[in-house]
Length: 267
Image (cartoon, rainbow, N blue to C red; front, side):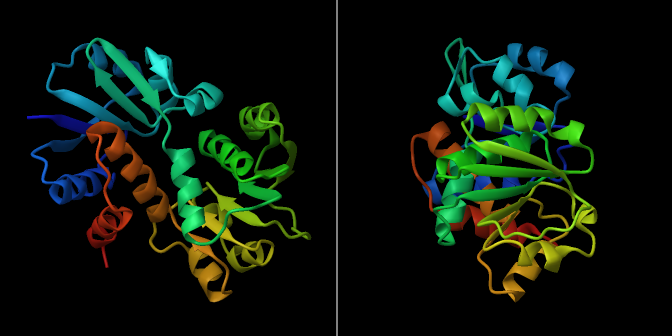
């Protein structure tokens, strides 16, 4: 039996198992998919100890950079960002892939958002760096990184600059006076607090990668303001569909994965 899993820590909250299992059922594959708790310092030993029954892994925090480093080959996105969310096993090799970026682009296109000039990103971590690549793919010229401390945006800013983007770094508590084509939030909901409507008014479309609590206040505010809104569940489903294709060689409808994730959320 072929085995796959999601790796990370903490991992109990992951929706990847319900999505990938739904995909296997739709594809009539007798594969298994589980969640495995792995710390960053334990990842090399875990990967070295695998048997031939394993095909691949979804990778989440805090392992995305380590997974890229431990691969024997990487795709173009991992090469650019140094961040992987997928590892495939093939013989003695490990290939690292990033489906977050193309998954985000596809999720935005599904909502009719395809061309942007200015992308405003709340947060400055690895996810913010990935969205700098999303912005570049969508034709953006500028990104703004809104963070609590400017030092937190250094790595993401460097990635954006290497992609040829103009970069501005601002503190998240400052008022926003101009309008961006796209606002992306990579920060917890409590960082946004009561500013959801203000932030939504500063953008023509909204993407909130956070889905706990569900639905997010930012997405609710965007829907209320009749702005195109992309949720963290949309991102999970699109990037997972690409992972399934990489692992199995077959395609599955994104709706199968999204519905499975939504059905598993508490009412």
